[in-house]
Amino acid sequence: MQIENPPTAKPYEKPAGERRGLLLVNTGDGKGKSTAAFGLALRATGRGKAVKIYQFMKTQGARFGEHRMFEQIGIPVESLGDGFSWDSRDLDHSAQLARNGWQKAKAAILSGEYFLVVCDEITYPLIYGWLDLQDVLETLQNRPKDVHVCLTGRRCPQEIIDMADTVTEMRPIKHAFDAGIPAQRGIED
Image (cartoon, rainbow, N blue to C red; front, side, top):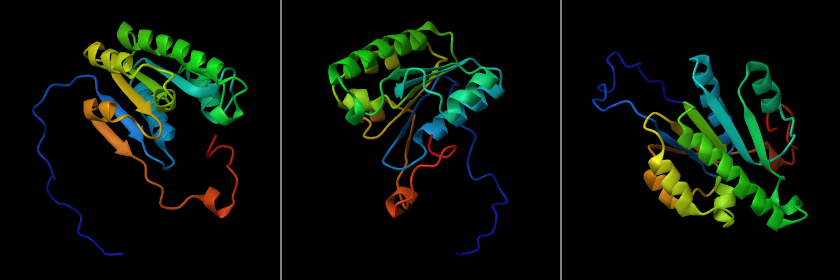
């Protein structure tokens, strides 16, 4: 490790642009995409802002750690899918669930009722062809000026990356799963 001197002057100038709703994307093969989006939801809620989270791959009625906590603090989370595609008994049904879920998320985004709308794992139904990319792009483009949207998932379509204001790619450097350690409740659920 190399020791650095802490900065003694602000390392940037204050931006001169206007405040507006941002399109944020968390993508890549590393862990932390949803976790970062949930952190945004917590931060916005802490400021008294209205937040809605849609999870495109989680099963309806799911009770993961985030569901339990968000329920306690009043952040609405809606699970829209039926789990991992390899566990699906009917991929046509999975696709229909994604389309139905997108209509809900789209309505929330366009309503202007929410400061932040999180579309967790939306990239999967996009890359599987279950959702119309053009419809998603038009919705994001036409959303009310002050609505922030955060999209998560691997292999985010380039068209969304090009439109986004902030894109973070999570890159795996080391993962416990690769060493044979199973997912841990409270860390990866």
